[in-house]
Structures are given as C-alpha cells and as structure tokens.
Length: 450
Image 1: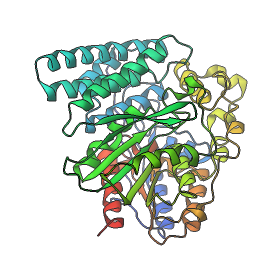
Image 2 (image 1 turned 120 degrees about the vertical axis):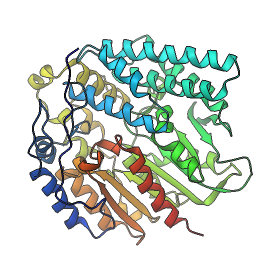
Image 3 (image 1 turned 135 degrees about the vertical axis):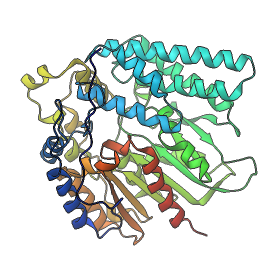
Image 4 (image 1 turned 120 degrees about the horizontal axis):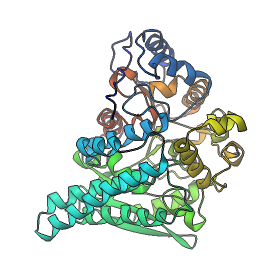
C-alpha cells in the first residue's frame, strides 16, 4: 500500500465554537466565506477550498473536506462515516484501517468482501466471549460486527443474493449485543401495512420513572441498526430513553416493496403510537431527530402530529425535489455517468432503489421526489436545525434553511452550523458525533427544563 497523506481541514478565520440562534444567519455566511478563503493548503486531489466552492453550486451530500484514505471520494465518505461511529462503539480504528488497507480502490465488490470478513471475525469473537460469560466483551464485539455488516451493504445492490443475508446478520448481531446491555436494549417490530417497522428501544434504567426520550429517524441510505452508533449512548448517558426505527424506504423494507413516500406522517404516527404505549416514556418530553432525508421525514410528520414536543433536523429539507435537482445524480449527463466510478454508481443506485426506481435510473430521482415537501409554518413545536459548514455552503441548502427558520412559528427555534475546523463540516456531522450530541442534548435539556 502507498503511504497516504491526510489533508488538514482548513483553518477558519473566526474562532468561535458554533453559531446559534435564529437571527445569526449573516454571521454564519461570513464565517463560512472566511473559512473558504482562508484555506490555502492543497494536497492530493482534494482541496478544502475547492470542495467548498464546488458545493456552492452543486450539492453533494457525500462531499468531504479532508482526505482520509481513498482517492475515491464516495469510499472516503463512507470511511469517514464508519470511523465516526468509533465514539459510540461501532468501530475500532485498527480494525477499520486493516480493512481499508486491503480494499481495491473504487471496487464495490472488494469493499463488500473485506468488511464482511471483519464482521464475521467480530461476530465469532462475540459468540466465544458470550459462551464464557464475558458479557461486556461479547456485547462490544457484536456491536462492531453489526456495524461492519451494515458497512459492507453500502455499495451492494439489492439483487445480490448476499444483500438480505448480510442485512439479517447486521440485525441479529445488534439484537445479541442489546440483550447483554444493562438495561437490555429491546428489538421491536411495529405492524404496518402488511409488514412491520423494525426498531430498538433502550431505556435509561429499570426504575420505571418516566423519562425524556429521543426517537431517532435516519435518512435515505440508513439502516436502523446504524442509528444506535450515531447517538444512542450519548442519549442514555444524559438520561434520555432512546428509540429508533426504520420507516418505508430504509433498511431492508424496500425488499418488501416499502419505498420512500411523501406522507411520512403515516408511518411516523405508527411509531409514536408504539412509543407512547411505553410507561417509561414521558409524553411531554418526547423529541424526534431526523438526519439526512430524515430532515424531511420528521418535520413533515410534526406538521400534523403534535405529540412530537421537540424536533431536531440535520439538516432541514423543506422540498426534497429541489434538493435532489441540485445534486450530481440529477445534473449528470449520460456521458458523465459513464465516467463515475463503480462504487459511486452502486451507492447512487441503491438510493434510487429505495425510492422505488430501478437502480440504474440514477437521474430519475428528483422527479420521483416531487411532492415531498412541507410547510414549516405548521411545525409548532420547538425546532433545532443543525448543519455542517460544508453543506451550508450550498445555495439551495442555505435557501431552504433560511426559509424554514423564518417560517417556524415557535420562538424556541435555533440554528447551529458546525465548523470545518472542528472536523464537523460533512453530511450529518458524521465525523464529530461528540460535538453533534452536545449540541442536540444541550438544546433539548433547555427545552425540557422542569
């Protein structure tokens, strides 16, 4: 393997940790601009300044502002995502870099094979530890095995025989890990339109006391299992019950013909019905958090379901069609698509499939999302909008955030942009989950003050 250099994040001129509040948009714009202009160092193929400049006119959710390992930007983005899960037990640095050191640059098949190999090793290790009564070691191994199986699936098209097998292994490992936690994490399945919505619930303790609760909803590429590694341990540590669930379009539900749909309030109503049947959940302190596509799914549901007492979005998407129309998937010509790497085509194809399209129909995604929009004026609960600096550089992302902030009627609304010089500029702030969690729970603590 070649020795690869890390690109350093650009130094921003402003040194403040974060911008907060609904009235600081001008300050945020200035900070983002100075971060772009302040970046002078260029190494390899990925200049931070160039990435910000390109993001301005063409939004790419997988655009990274530092280089970690791969020349293939899509691979490097997913590597950043899996490394980010280390904070909450989803990855071990040494294991991850051993895996990527054996992956053929740009090859979906190599990616799948190497992550599956590591996942099987960790699953086996977990079973050995469990057989000897080592509950903590077993749980930690099963956790990582689950997340590695999910990582193997990132570039796997649904017609591959192993897609369902690895998805089931991802689930079974997290179930085994959850049973070993104290208190245990429960797997559940909510009946919904001739299928079930799978999910996990972990309560803070066995006291029976009603607690603040966070319901986590993922995005257009997520499995419910990886949502645990996004934020769950941070929630439990702060006294919040944690519940997460796949809605149609996510996880393995498209295998059953359940694709993304405009009326996300329908499946989310079923989720809330289930959640509020649990005696440990305080209905007056119930928050819902949506990332990526969840930045549409959650606030759309909040326009009609007032049982959501606080809403967090990372970031907000008021109109999915307009967002998708601004992405490479929509703007690429057939000639340009042919030049895309195999890994990028595969991951984009999986997203198209989740919206009910043939995986080869990458450019049809925006049209499929027409009608996926909501009116922010109807979201009456407090709202926190989070976004990484890189995403906020995009004109359409910025427009939707600003319009949403202006229209939200509740004065307890807040906007926070996390910075490139904190390693927190990328999609969903996946590379700095400690910072993301601090922002989310510090705000929720203020909203839910007794």
